Length: 580
Image (cartoon, rainbow, N blue to C red; front, side, top):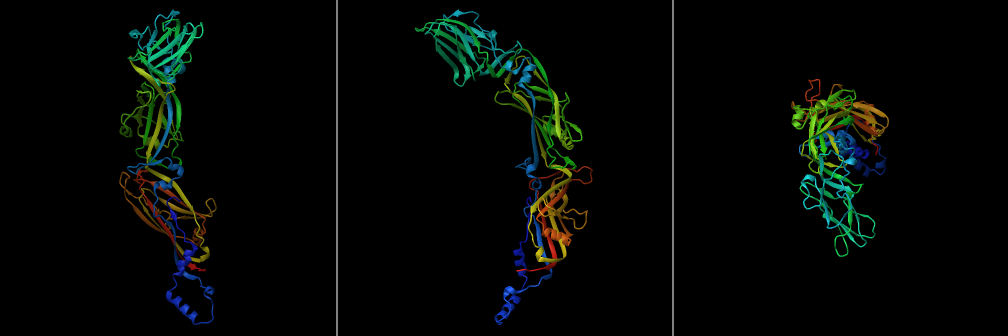
């Protein structure tokens, strides 16, 4: 039983306790008589008659360590319950995620056939016919072909299947290579070298081979994990064929990328304004988080819960998300009651319900290696959580608006994701809450108690929790065995509550503990059920309400340092049989 110590008198302890009741003088007189008497019974043969009208105290619960709200929850419930290390406030946290859009969605919205085509790079072959090598040939790559590539024989832009006025300003190859078709004499040497790049090998890569036949051949310079930055920089491919004396020789007939090339990072430079939109289909998030803690028929009234939506955007385009379209966004409970969600980027304004909207602007990513995070907060979330939503359904429309000159980064396989996160402080009012704790026991005192004249269950609770309620003991033969008794701790009055809530301010903040003492008469059957029990359940029926005069339970603040201590024991009068 969590933080509740059920203390049992072992039989030997009871015998030692009863032995102390005999006076020293009486035992001394008995010893003297035995010394001067040559015959008589041995001390082990003495028979002590049962003690009548003997009172004994049997402690049941010693709550020295105290019971906090955490002690009332199961291990499963505790997984979601956190404690603020600074304030000691208790709160539940829950998180889920859902997809908004992917790179594939976006590139198709901008006119690409698919993500595979979008990240497949190409350029026109600058060598229209076979030409002789008179000097080394160089090919420069630029985002703006009209500006030229200084010092290069040919200047070409890299492209994909996006619109004509969109050029590639940066890319990193996932796989592929530059291949050059040539014809030369056996023994000649062919060299490819690319400079002005970013790679694991530095800013340049060189490959070479020696010609072995007169037929047209191909040499390939690998580009895996090689990045080309084309803004203010001109990566340049140099091609040379030389004979044994080092003089130019041979012919070149083509320069192109391998057909299977693909990039995993691309930046596009938009030449004109571009607008694209896509639908966010209806999806659902399971939010039935608190059903195990708060039973379905319990009334709950939260104060100031925080429901946050975090949008992670790895794409360099800002997104306007309208969650009023295509069905919108709302929470829904088991009865079909719905509560719409609106948002604000400021958490305080969201709690107060100020300037809330279903239009969310998600900021663009500015780096391939870091997603851009945009946080918004659901407005008036107490209204949402008080209907006990079991799901949040969402749908909407996402739109992208790019201006002329915008440079936008795209990562292959990237997804714009939203994370739903709820922080629900234990600042709430509730009714009809049931908590249960139990422990195995082993009193086994029935043989020592011949008869019971009266028994009083004395109970005292000092409560630092702003929670009131009743307490019941249920005795069983074992944890899953037969129930032998149910004892309500009410002092003989069904309207009495053993657990009185701690005193609170009008805002539900605890100002001081409460103490309550009750005496409950027990029947002989109830006493023997306790003494013979193999397992005892302690059940709490609890409620929290800062203002009982209102129809809705007003919230109180529950913190980790608030404790409730319970002291309980039986004062029993009867006939005790001492059996040494």
